[in-house]
Length: 546
Image (cartoon, rainbow, N blue to C red; front, side, top):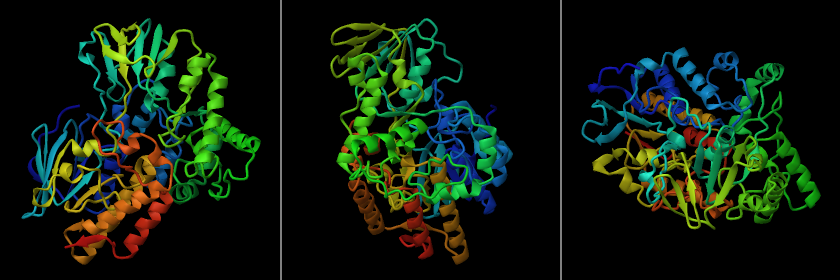
């Protein structure tokens, strides 16, 4: 793609960082408000996480009919998804289609990574610079940088000595990668690895999986979408969209033609026999998908319920994996089920029954170093042609903290967040006027269908800007008191669940030295939307206008 001319001293009404689904929808809505807007995007095309994550088997873990924009009834009716869970290429194709259908690309500058954003108190603008040499200013800055966009590369002795091919799951090459006849090693068994391992095993001569901590995974039960079901579903799309926004804790989607109201707290485990609980879990297991965690309503609130649901999954693993030791190694025991993002897979556990696939438990046989030709374990050396790192992300805060962001009086965001992220509603930080974060820490974010949360955040910001315009305000910020109250509330909600009991990336536990703070808002998209609606109805309580 040809590089557009650099912005030199350009001025806009708003600057947006990132051209994923959040950035594109922000641009679309800002145009409707008559605002001049520039997006800077590090990649050479739109799509955000679906531009970067091209590893084998990459697909969404939310229903494709729900993981899509709701703002345009025409768009949702005309676009046809092929599978229940869309693949990365299909989602990227959708993102490109949206960018072209709504003529968004002319205001996006690709291959421009924002390196700094400094607030000028005197002029009342944000001054933004990119690694390509762009310089621009705007009174409004929107950070649409994504929650899972900064890869985590582990500190492995000798990693740079490896002479074979090396890939990171979230920085996959754009050209095809073949594993035909190769000895492949993959480090990590999180969501990316769970999707990639069965696909890589299909062509590799030998696949060795190096696992520290197993994750719970449930079957996707993926398949082609039935055109007749899609037609019937789309005839009720508006009802589904409202249900995803308000009726479900996560907004992940539903499978009924007409959305069916549920009473989520009605079915708890207290009065369920083991047989009854297993029958309920069986039903959700056979249906497939991450909604398995909703099979029993108090699974993320009650330790005994959680133990029983986890025991059910352990039994399914042992029934599937033939080698008893491998099965035990794949059974997670270090965290309650669901407190790390549950994986959704296609034949993951079955893959370990193939004779050329080996699971290495690195708690028993630690990785001592990476060598020029493979991985040296405590008890042996594993020869490899290709090494894959599926080691996750510096989630939620990583992308923001990689940019030199400075607010009023030169305050650095990195200093403000030194002990963990602090926001009001996951949208603003005290001391950083006219800066909004999309799906930031303190919002449902990664615990939700991201498209549902993105649209809610962007719509809230646009309504706030309209309010400012109507009242003659030019600047909005929040106070430390309101920030403190919201952080306390987010922690209170998290403490009522089992989430803090896991060393998860929700807590920043996968990054050495990162503060242990539960970052998302665990009450769900419906409850969060109600909070935001009340804030707006009360004259944007907690926001200060000038």
